[in-house]
Length: 277
Ligand SMILES: NC(=O)c1ccc[n+]([C@@H]2O[C@H](COP(=O)([O-])OP(=O)(O)OC[C@H]3O[C@@H](n4cnc5c(N)ncnc54)[C@H](OP(=O)(O)O)[C@@H]3O)[C@@H](O)[C@H]2O)c1
View (tube, rainbow, N blue to C red):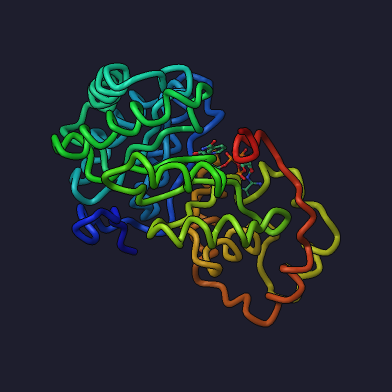
């Protein structure tokens, strides 16, 4: 999939993004993230989604080096921590720190993890993100947990609109309006928590769909996010599930799409800054 940034000159800084990746949130034991990344790279994953807040960027970098896979073959997404999203200089400082922790020359996609809490910090933070893009430290910039009104406000201060909005999406939280608002500014939707953090995998409706399709419940949820056009980044620390999750891309769920769409219930599995002012 292609991402780019809408600007007064058209679409700029176009970059290719794999539409599927490994999320590495809540891998807190030492070595857990590195080992999951190594399993994923071995299984054929080409995209890893980390964040400063996850305290494991260094393990992503170590796995990349140890795997022997070329840097250009892997897409690394990381995020500016919310507590660091307070001004232009802080963005520069923390982007440099992430580059150091990841031990890489560039980050493929750098996201503002959530709308900065102070509204007046949002413009200078985005200017800092744009500076990182112009300097080539990052190949693409985007946001995460931005609601339609946050995206709208960016039109006032952004030279380059975000290439991605990473938000929670899964069969139980489908967000058609927010997906449309994201696409309207030329950004792609990245679906986080596609399994609703595992909270809903035992729901009878999902189990029925999975058994009719001959796959696992997790595979149904992942493929749903993928098929509605989202870049999808399920997390697992287990190598068997890492392989299972990737294999979901091969499953045809079209016959069950209506049943999956019917699972919508507005369920938020973690946090929801999209509804903040
Ligand atoms: N931008 C944000 O604010 C934000 C917020 C949340 C997440 N994210 C990103 O999105 C990624 C994914 O979201 P998430 O980690 O919240 O949750 P998720 O991917 O929806 O679910 C992960 C949970 O599901 C389990 N699981 C994974 N594969 C499974 C399978 N095949 N069968 C059964 N259970 C399975 C995992 O356990 P095991 O590990 O034991 O397999 C884990 O408990 C994160 O890792 C992070 O990169 C971003």
